[in-house]
Length: 102
Image (cartoon, rainbow, N blue to C red; front, side):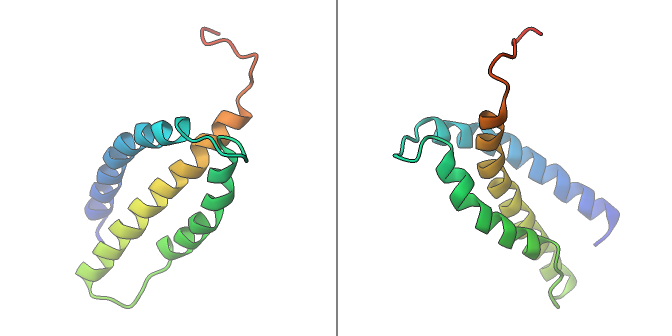
């Protein structure tokens, strides 16, 4: 993969991330389980995130085009999974006494 192809992949994934982040927040806001609002995302998102992290940083024996498709698919899935884990974690660890204007 050339550096320009990798840069373009990061650009596309960040655009998709800008769209998926608000959608994930809406999903989390509508969630209400007996385990709470955020805990299920942390519990059930950890294993897929770990698996996708391993897949994202491994290189299968494919053609150049196949490797490119594999890189896009795993990096997009990892980014979305990261959002499902990181947004609730950030909401739980935010300082409740923090001022918005400070």
